[in-house]
Amino acid sequence: MELSQFLIYVASGGGAAALVSFAGERLPWFQRQTPRTKSYLMLGASIIVALGAWAVMTYVPAALLAQVRVPFQITAGVVSAWLANQFAHANDPAAG
Image (cartoon, rainbow, N blue to C red; front, side, top):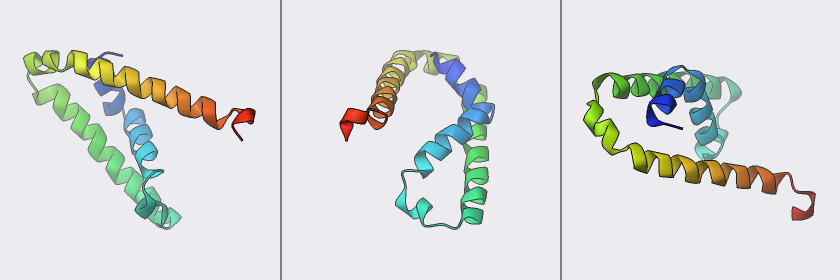
């Protein structure tokens, strides 16, 4: 995935919600919140993340974005492989 595609996905809202949900599910303090509080935290954090992605697309110079293109692609590849590994491990009946 290209950095520009990722930023568009995050700015669209769905990507922001997915990122915030992924992080929230792994944070013990978030898990201690009531369902209502979690809902509002998810809403607020998703809006902030989506607006942040939009701000990067709007205000960060294209030359700077071009410089981080390769590190972003490496990171995205590693994270994708890790997620696939986590999914496979969680769904492997032999993993016990």
